[in-house]
Image 1 (cartoon, rainbow, N blue to C red):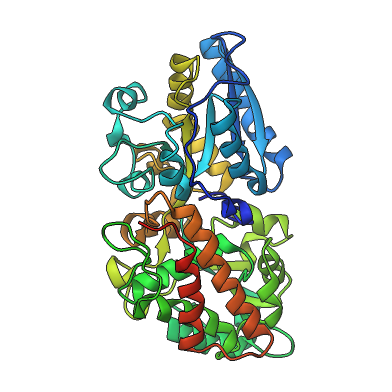
Image 2: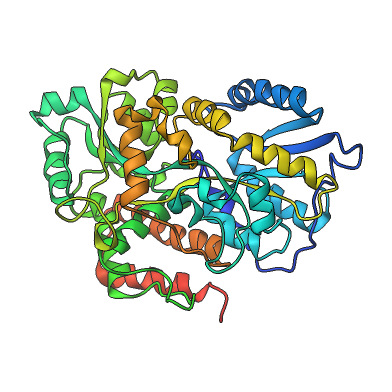
Length: 434
């Protein structure tokens, strides 16, 4: 999901356990079939940056079609609540961006246009999109609730100056190597690796991947919450132990939720971070591309792949249409425009992400090493977060459990298998019963 920087942090806290009124087009489409309203997620370093990136493209779309697009860029902290309000009030946009991990939850409201064969054909067909991106567009077996727009994945970023100072000659590829490098880096007030301990979604992304590496998941095959399996408990403990036992994460990271770990990384205070498409984010912190390196996110041993070698969740942004927009034809034309090869190359280049459209990925810009790692991860070793209607509650309750465990570690309280299991049991009890 998103620019997941600070992205998608607390926005997933609101429960989706309600019956929604299908809506759409409430703000823009009453005026004329020649008008669309578009809610864009904040992808750049500021809302103004997004407007500068997007407005020329919207103007070009208007020149081509005669359809004016009214743009609003919405911060991640507000986006989900705005969408949920729109689904119940009927006062929403025609088209909107959603974090891809929300797809199944928002699909369950019934407010979004299903992308059946006819609608997909109107934008060029399903086969244009990468399989991993399509896997995060709604519940398996149902028509997608959205189409992929920007694709992202986690990688390990390392501070070259700190690595050189510590005598580390190559980036770590396994968790044991991360621990060894982290201990060399952790000295004189500096830390080995940064986390965003109060960022609920970031917590979920990391422990989801670690659970895969432990051969576990947080949901059963029939969609029931399964937070207390041995593998899930081991995954959460491994992540928190970066601070609690290995002590390669600074205690202050327990309170980080808004890119503070990236600020530390840029200021030579933290040697490594696990992050998504960071080029813009690092630049906004004053860090040049020559100052950092990138490697695939770590695995237990060997090389990244599927199953226990999964090393990232499938992150990204999807584009959805409200089902009863009064300008469906115009909305489909706009989605086709935004997912065209030309726009995919331009927009993903601007945001440092990777196109989920296969043909657009062939552009030479995406062969850059920093983007090639992300592209290869998405193709070979990333897995979609559970596509269940309760996904947003999962992010909230388990993300909070991890946040509380980081707070324990920062305060010097022991983090044990038993205490982790107790937190996850409490989280599971907060999930809707099936």
